[in-house]
Image 1 (cartoon, rainbow, N blue to C red):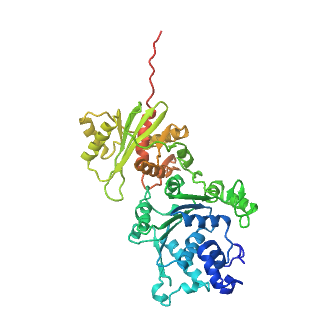
Image 2 (cartoon, rainbow, N blue to C red):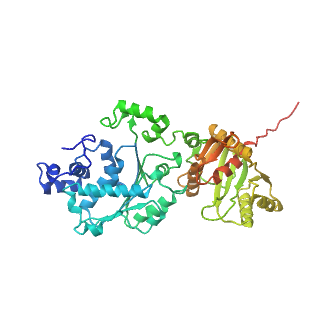
Image 3 (cartoon, one colour):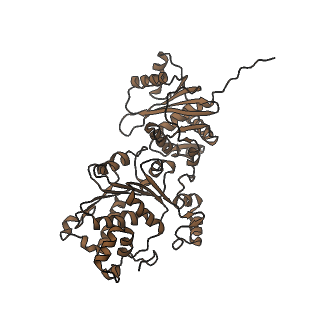
Length: 476
């Protein structure tokens, strides 16, 4: 008999008799080879929910899975422990990677994997006789010659070859704005052996989270399971209406929306640029272009002060003002350019996009770049970057988002535009409204890793918003 969540005992050893009941071992194993849901329910004595069964079916038929499910849905247990256990029981020579937001969390997944084996009479057969030398805190080998690794979500993962990868709490994993560790390190571990890669999370970081990017990635199948569907609990046995109401009241609507309803756009407290405002300005039909759309084109440049791998970027953003809309046409960023190279790149972009005005941050190296541009005969203006001026830039950008005057390119077939917008979103949602400890005045502080694109865009948008259409008229 399979047990519900309330009846299930995690620390109790499950016996062969409990697993088999009246069935013969060979019959059970034969059926289990073709039906992992049947095998999991019998081996672990747990009655899987209908949605957990869907997860298992999907991962059997799709190589890339983006699973979003509410907090407490057993997604990590099912997908990072029980299903991989079925794989290791029936298949040989697999490499399985478990990684998560912290190394400690990865070790906890590995510990649950080992404990599951040691607390089950059937699965104990997976322990090799020399387990003392083959079982480590972060790596084990089974009698089927399967290797299970747990690693921190870092670049050091490169080099492992995998058949099955679980990235647990993927939206919490520390990565850069374009998720390069996931795309350039994690995914390639499975390319040689066509690994199944499963990202598991409850949405975090608004639209900037990995799960939201993968939702727009045509290679990934996204599975979303909020606690409430059509207003009703999808797991009433564990989450009846009265429990849901208590959770909702206790944690607050914004947190409940994110943790249980998977609303990545739930407003972040104190956010200057709430995710839902940004989402309304995304255009999935356009990418970067140098085409003249018949408006006024403006180039903004925000320059980094220092160089090095942790330094800020030089960020260049080009917008075009067309009637009441300001369209982002192109953007790029660099590190380590000397002043002459910065100046030359501004000129190249100005010429390529036939811009009519350049706006720059005049502080620090910006002053030297400005002098170079003036000598080249280019129309360059300073942005007001003192405290009040910077706040005005950000407030104007917020106003444009409120009024849907900004058009942000997010064509998934344009890698450069998609990467830019992903980075931009992470920078925008990082701005929080707070009070200055010195003056008590409201200020807008960035909590993101960088804010270069956001500031450069704010400069360009402010200049664009000051541009007005002129209509020829005859005065009588």
